[in-house]
Image (spheres, helix red, strand yellow):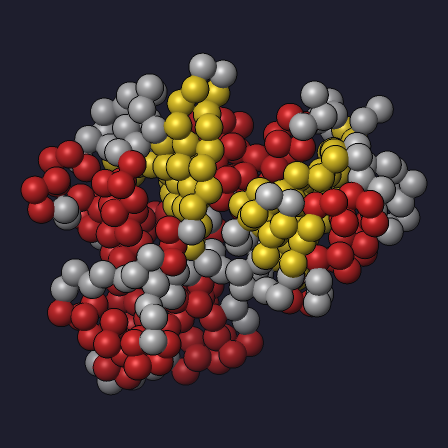
Length: 328
């Protein structure tokens, strides 16, 4: 029996799945990425577990949150460097494939069930046109899909690092604030988990809000971005809700920029944990308003189907498909 290893490597967590070629999951496990100084160490820890240490892996796909150049890859928000040939030799893996994490998400779209996707804008679907995917997590990923006779050709991008373009006076002030702090300000600097925290801190200082002490303590004790979202949606905290809505508005604007770039009439897909966990606010809030606010092109982007992916493992699903593909 042949065995496949799929790994979704992110700046916050790294998710492993060992499965048979027939699709039976043998072991799936998540690790905190920052607990390891290199990918080799976390891979070694996973493979050395008692229940799988005697398995030989025939094919592996490592989906990396960062640029991939041939057989080499770097994780953007971690000091991890990967070389496919070194990993194959060191861990006795038959074939190792490296891809960008949002290329894996793009491949995983075809495996999604109907109830794992919700519609934000119906649009006018043309399956012969391109697709695009964008998603905020630790960073901001983007990928393009072009239709071919036997499926989709996926092109990874680093479009999340494009320059942030403010669209109103408040966003201009945010940009000026971030230029002073960071110099270059990309969309990823704002449309990401750390970016949501940055927006919150900016609004708290600029508007001189009275901060909820319970919220501040929860940010200290846990994941600050998740806490802001929780207090916005569950506690109706004014500052948290304003922060989340500004985040969603800028997210929608950049999704609209991507839509204008590729015209994905087969669908623009929103991935990443932040959107999935806050999907109700994405449906009710300013996302689509910002997405379609493109001046002369508003009528055009109103025709683009927009879908939000609820399945958090879509990248792992895509990585497994690629691992399976390279065994054939």
